[in-house]
Image (cartoon, rainbow, N blue to C red; front, side):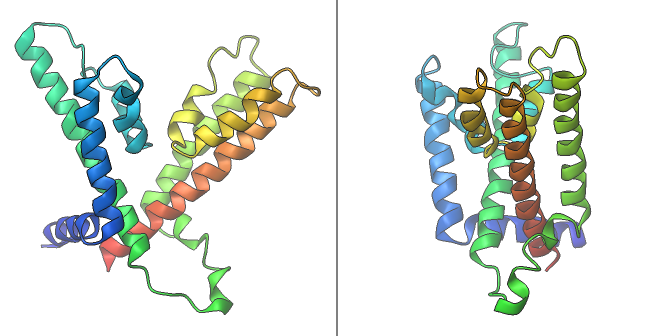
Length: 209
């Protein structure tokens, strides 16, 4: 069955090399630290390690702290952890696909670098989502009278590399010209989206193979 074969291939990529196994071990350690020290900085580590898909839990009606009694909270937290585990397996499979990819000939290496970002539905769908997030940010910053926290959506959608874009643009908020910080953030998140799309494309190719 094709679906069973792809699931087997995904698990093989997620556990079949040292890079993927090291990542999964780091995720497991961060999850233990999250429950052991819920009020500390490491509590956010599992979500950052499993970005960008882990941030979809922000739109889900359950997670740690869900009201409704002890049993409801345990169930909600368990479902949330299972989602993070699925995100971790996908990210580990991406690392596995990178670690096992065949060497490209120098003449075709540069031309094929961005091809995985556009030659499959998974990457194209992600790029459409990232483009919508960046577009909403640009609209809020340059056209809306109250931009608010518009940067949160491209930050979440293009994580984890979007953190670098945020770090680069934050010191420029009071710089002149006024649009410089937003431009740096937009360019940074766009590049982060391209990197994520390439990684997803490589994973899609490996699953097909």
